[in-house]
Image (cartoon, rainbow, N blue to C red; front, top):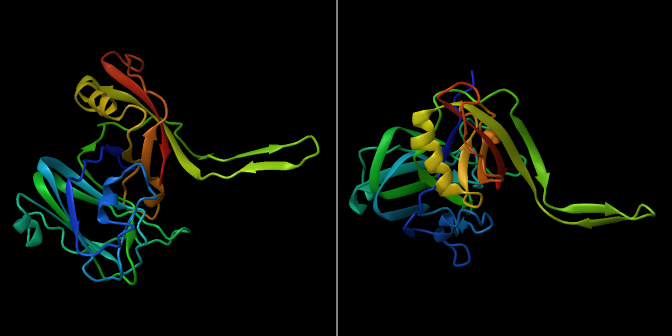
Length: 264
């Protein structure tokens, strides 16, 4: 049975240091969430760690490194702590080395997203990610740390998963094609029609105030640990303002319709 979807607004990563980066693609690029092409890339596979200081304690219960050239042997280790010494040692919620690609799959583009849910929210100031057992240079686009927002009831029937071509093609009167190049991005549309008043007022209304239609967020439409979880992971913007409609399904409930344009 599918699990409840969730959304995570990425927390700004703060001051970032690393053990291995090339000058053109520093680890600081992990904090450039909208610019997927700005990546962290290493020179070889030694000292593959990145560490950061939020500046103050932030709530975290989900961690994901996105669009990485991981291989089947690649591992990821996540540490959160109150001090640098904690995350450089053994923090209380040290994940230990975990498979980066979980469950194991092979993607067409060779890019993968890790997936790590913490059993409870941890409010910490420091974080550290270690990559192990990788072959060659390591490269990744984003690092998402934050707190999940999820409804207590499922989405409504009729969700849509598709693509949107950012390029164009036109045909002249003689059938000659005029093509403009552009990436093809994935899209997701779904409705949450049974939000409680508490969920609307304390979770989804504040969420949309943060996001608007230009700030990105991680959307995991079904976090069930299957080979399709990567395909159900989206990171992008809300294309239209999903107004809260009160009482549409039942008095005391709220409905929102989401349309996501994904960058990954």
